[in-house]
Amino acid sequence: MKQSIFMTIAVLATAVVAFTIYMFVLGDPGNFQNGELRTKPGNLLGTVYTGGWVVPVLITLTLLDLTLVFERIFSLRKANGRSSITSFLKSVQSALNSGRIDDAIKACDAQRGSAANIIRTGLERYKSVVGEPKLDSEKKMAETQRAIEEATSLETPLLERNLISLSTIASIATMFGLLGTVIGMIRSFTALARAGAPDAIQLSIGISEALINTALGLVAAIVGIVAYNFFVTKVDNFTYMIDEASYNVVQILNTRTND
Image 1 (spheres, rainbow, N blue to C red):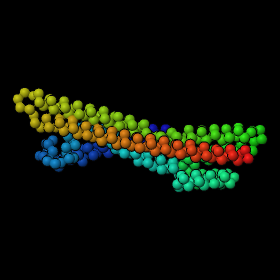
Image 2 (cartoon, one colour; image 1 turned 90 degrees about the vertical axis):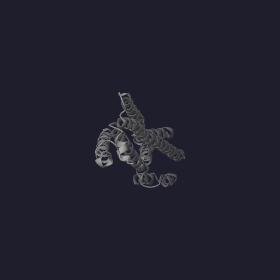
Image 3 (tube, rainbow, N blue to C red; image 1 turned 180 degrees about the vertical axis):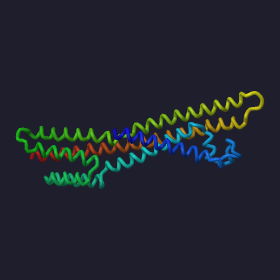
Image 4 (tube, rainbow, N blue to C red; image 1 turned 90 degrees about the horizontal axis):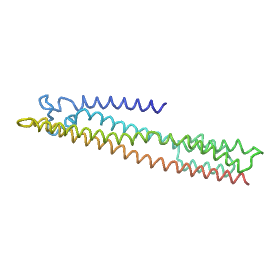
């Protein structure tokens, strides 16, 4: 529910910003000659404006890309916890090796983040079953492992959130860029097909529209693809580290249970 609300707000906000940029920054009359849709020499803003109605769509997609990038950076930083993961895991392992399970849980409470939540869930489950005389050591560890796996399955979607959106935006941006290119080429050929001398202004506008939309579509797609691959790699490394840390915790608990 929260995710859908976030995406709705992000899309609406970026669309408003993109339309404002298109109308009042790119479409500023000062970018054009004598009030005509003919840009002043070297004026990039006016040139982009001639890309037509596809331009604000592509700007929206680019801004949405950047919004999701910042959201992912913030979320993954929060998932890491308050301090270094390496130092946190060392403190937990040291406490468990000394048999101080409560201290390890306190370290998880202080650290927070995905790794700390998963390990804390496993340790709390271990504490609840370690005193059960009806359970042998193997069943106790199985219960602990199951709790860790359940916690991991809950944390993983939070780490992977919005990654599909980045990939989708990259694909959509490419399609919209191609659409704008086709529209621009249609306008160019229409200007050439008119009887008598071709309309030079309309011809130049059509060519500009085609090339500008191609460029903007590629920019949005490149940002989305690079961000998607970057965060997928980061999430994979993070989940691998969590799995390794959970495995070490289980092994330490198993050793102490069998002693």
